[in-house]
Length: 147
Image (cartoon, rainbow, N blue to C red):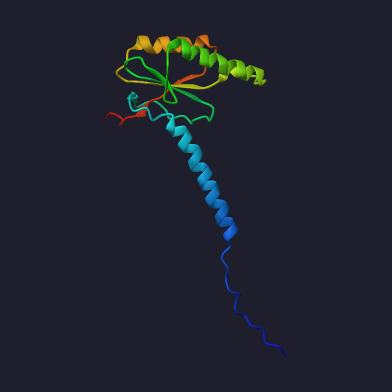
């Protein structure tokens, strides 16, 4: 009669799944870095709000930074109001050529300075709407709720 050995085989470490996880984490951090890089303009002090919600970011969202002096920047490039409208019109034309049904739903997030004037903000909003974009959101920071 043969006696069986009940000891389990030596455990081995699977390296392939670990490499897959590392690559997925690398891709995740690269993608999130690109999104947060657009909001690094330190000249803009975003207003605070206790009631505002932090909505999920979209990958094709255009982030427009507006300083209190009225300087408009996108991806660290300075634009005039006319240049902003022309750039957004080109984006809209390309979206329509590509056959996107809801090209007017291109998301734009405005990061305006808390100390800026409303007049400058409304002028920028007018230029965005003249380009045919109506999906405009505003960036804010959460503040401590008052008691």
